[in-house]
Length: 204
Image 1 (tube, rainbow, N blue to C red):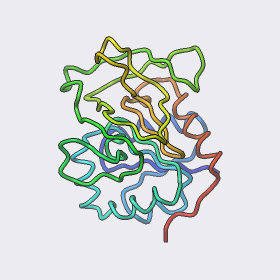
Image 2: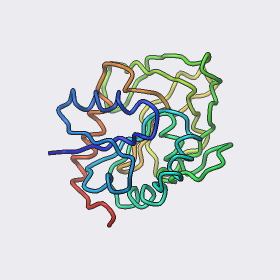
Image 3: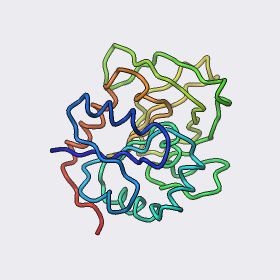
């Protein structure tokens, strides 16, 4: 059976687990290096990126996670998780996992009161838009040549089309929170990535 880990140091990991279970997938909360073993994929949820990075250091998870993403096992980061996966993140005192070739600006849309929702077109999902929830969302400032843009926010919101869902190989990152809606298409898309990759051994 496919088993997806959800990094459970803080943030909305329970909501991700609920979405995956609706799709019939086994989940595992990850707080230790040992809990990475045997996973078919990993989700880094939304939360607070500085807190995430500090807790990864405190729980001795940074190096195991960095090694884990290098094995090719699919990983998806949402909101703060996008920041953790990015190659570069502005104003962050801790290292990221450098898993996807993007540079992000943290809290670019403002604070909690500046959160918003928007219907966005997502390339793999066809004509029906996805209702995206943005909470203190990052902005993608640079996109590497190997990164595919799956969705952007409307140009009138930022003055230019801004990528909010990106993928590079088996790494997926979204600036919003699909787990806070009843729409499981992003979780299903991540599972498609997992199944296309097959099971890759975790680092020993």
